[in-house]
Image 1 (cartoon, rainbow, N blue to C red):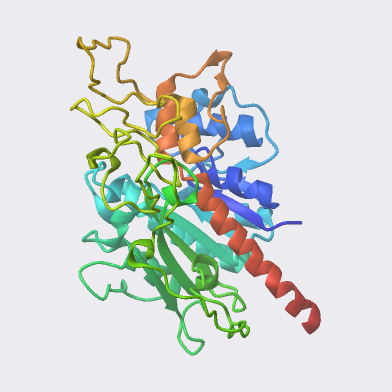
Image 2 (cartoon, rainbow, N blue to C red):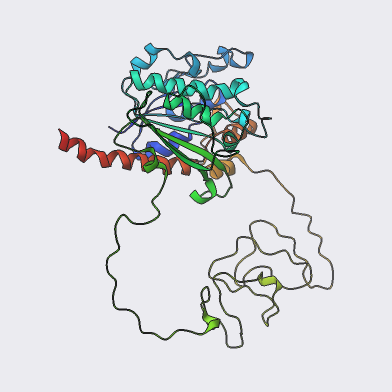
Length: 408
């Protein structure tokens, strides 16, 4: 059986979309909001929320469409009792991204004085209780980068909570760095834990959006350092194998230096292919009307307003996104068919790495409005980032299995 997970602040559960294909087993969810709770039920078999916060938006009637489920949804994490945790049995991973609005510019940065910000501290309390009751081994937490610099020092408070400190840890400068590592020595009081955090940008994990988020991993397992999960090693573990004999080739000329390929692309062409050209191709004067000669394709053509010809490499079709181009013609163009539009919900699902239609559900026989889908997707995590962490966590655990077998 795979690692067992309790998901908190689940939303539409990017963690499930990322980790279930890796073999993780989700023992429960915590999500009181109406629309995400319906998504959890229809996509993952979760029950209606067991505990609801106070407020008219959490009226029990709004969950009437949720039938019996096979995975518990606790709803409000602040009301989870020790008896609830005992019923769950052993849990390996506690996962969650506490509400980020109190630490973001969009949420006016209320910090820990905001009720939403205080949920981060409730998350720490839950983790410590689960360590004692459920044998919790790992914690994965996500939030906006504002936690690194806000005046209330929320990251320092979280670090102190996990390490048993009496006061918040203080950053080395005016803010916490984008990555860090905390170790609690065995002789110190408090839980024995290693903690690592790192800012990950979703654009480098296969989705077309810039989305910087802080991911924190805490390990209560003394065989696995949290840093080994979140950080890659810069080089190989050992000395590289000896190479072959030194090459005796003569050095090339300066024109064919680093970054150049120097290939003839046409009989009458004087253009050299470069991996990284030193100027935008539309600014060069050549005999091919600024045709781009690159090894990689252009995503969007360059804006041209001087009759300079093509704004993209020759041989490629028109861009999917409209680009304003003033072509050399005898009469002006009036393009009336192109208008700005908002992204469709399915496009937002793809931006976050979800499967198409993940949030496209029916409630009481009617399709939900796009607004609910936009909000839930915006509050969620990038699935590929969570896949990266889940794969490395699983690999770290698997590496300890031979050690456990040998000890037995």
